[in-house]
Image (cartoon, rainbow, N blue to C red; front, side, top):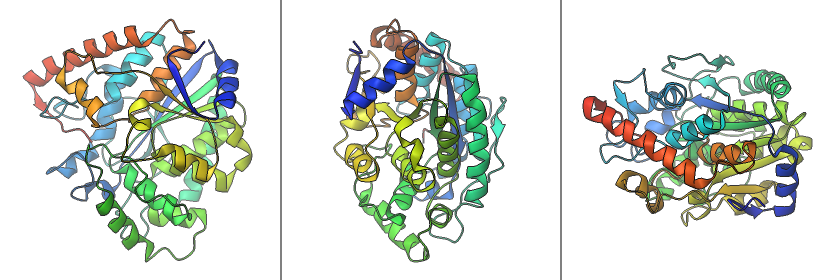
Length: 367
């Protein structure tokens, strides 16, 4: 059973939770935000045009809902044809008929679709004071939201989209005392660990108190407190799949500080590209914080006819927009009827459509 899932941490606990939600009804959420940290040259795959990162999160959720983007004149495919992981998420949600709710944690550009707003503001460069405003208040609001969403589903799946988020995740982890340098992932094949370390070490000089709320305020981004609060509120009632890569370890570290008792209802759900990434180590990070289960989808693009999809196998992008968690959720909800084969076909179909759109419009670089 569960042949298309890979259990890479706490297998028995993972299977116990999956057994509870097998064939049940999920709700997929995506926490979207911006941080000026993502605009530091060399941090994001946005390259020479970092201001485009303001549009990445809203474009991602517009793609999930509409199959196209409205906030940008183009589609989220790079000049090299490498697509946003949102195409994996969209394919999963569509095939399994999974409801979706975007959550604004703090954006510079709003998506042109309905969303929930928890009253956050976009994040600043962590090298400056007060990178995140009022994290304690936004966590409390997100907890209320998570608690209420739990009444609408059998399990919650919580993804994210924020450019530069692995650097701020590193900041929070280090700020809370974890050995996290050289362990967070990147959207680029060459993970810029040296640059990330330099940025975080500079930010640490102004940290002072390592209270969790102060750490988020000085070292984090707006996605982290909202995602943490959402998971805490929901996990009091239903299992929660934390859909993402190493950024989820920063969220996990915050949850541990605030409401440790919900940790046993959490699972990190990600892609095999994260697990196989030799430039990061999500398993070691998770076990240093709190040994929650980690599961991955075995989805592969190795045999794709499209070079842009095959690039994922070379360490480009790896995860984002809850891609791994969405694929896993489609498999769980459908009781394995939606497998990697038919999911892959739908992803290629969506990607082909994006390429056709790209030929007609300008491109928007991927985060």
